[in-house]
Length: 257
Image: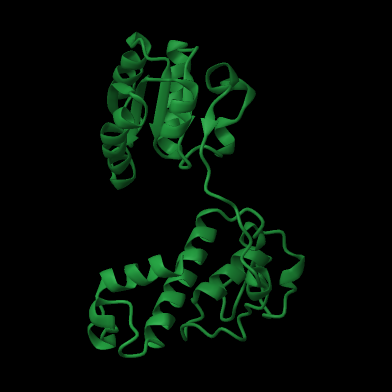
């Protein structure tokens, strides 16, 4: 985001953040790096409320409206932005150049004709999308008869199965079958179900988790293969597997990358 600000020569901007690690770390980064990177400054930094606090939202939008900064950077979440935009529309605050963090950059409910006069032209940062090989095939192999859960039939797989096929595993509540419900057989065809669970074409945060797990696995594997006298640490030593330190794993990350 700082690179984008520098590219367009935007040196005067406002910052809205969520009151959690996500927003607070972003604010610290902007306050420390914005000036050295491109000579920019923040006109204001405001915290977005989690609830639909009309008085606080009115105050935040009033700060935006009165400020001479026309660029507004928002590190927030979907719900916060939905609440904020209600007040932006109410006060009819237009002419702002929004910059969106990945927390709300691709939220469908904010990409509507109703909000285009206010959010049109927003520059959003999104997490890279990627494919996780074999994930869909793995999901399609999940079946109640292969993944036994609790004895009372209330495993996560059984609950998902009941919700997806609108059935219930025996024993059903008294009168449930007579009321029109059906019993689950566990042999229902999951491949024919249209469910968001099986849509693996739009994985962004999940793809990052996938890469992180593999990076950790490779780092640990390399440490297991370390030969004394040829290690990456002081005096060519290896890490002690029983007393492995986080910084050693991180160092191995760096070597692998």
